[in-house]
Length: 260
Image (cartoon, rainbow, N blue to C red; front, side, top):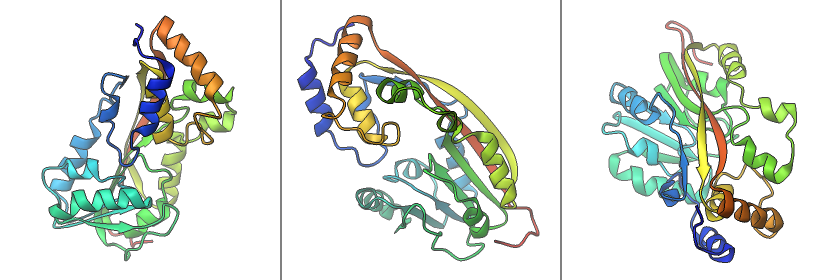
């Protein structure tokens, strides 16, 4: 069960690893996460193959969008973090896709009814009114999102018990209500709770550096006592187990409905 490596080496390696983009290959052999049963990337690719104009919101480094074998004639992605904008541009430009630098909370910089497909994997926040506005009548929004109390075991280890508001944040029922309030029809909504295992303290550190909303004020120095204690716990007792939550939502603009 022991990694055979000391705390300092594991943490130094995790701190030195880049955190841009949504490539999680660094975790191979160090952490595992059960995958949702619906296969988002494949299902997204199927929809892209039949679209004429598509928008991928908060594309990260563009990895998921680039994994599709066929992209529509018009393919646009937005991203707010400059290192990811550069990464996504390098990855998607050769495929004929345009990457637009756009802050996460800004209105979408596109005309009403510009797209027949809008996608987003793990958006920080879903701007339902804007999505409804840029979709054509009969257009589809397809998204995999982080669900409520995701990885709460990690958050509570470092921060203590979480409030009910924090635990219910990102509730799929709220997403359905917000989509419907924006004039969309929800045609699919599924949820999954997925097992995660962290096999060394470096994996925990890298995860918290990359997924910054779990422990928003995280630094190695600030949480060193808790990190060292968790290192000892993993070395003696095996992986730290947590659970992520995900939900899939698909919504459509009614045919004949105007945009906005």
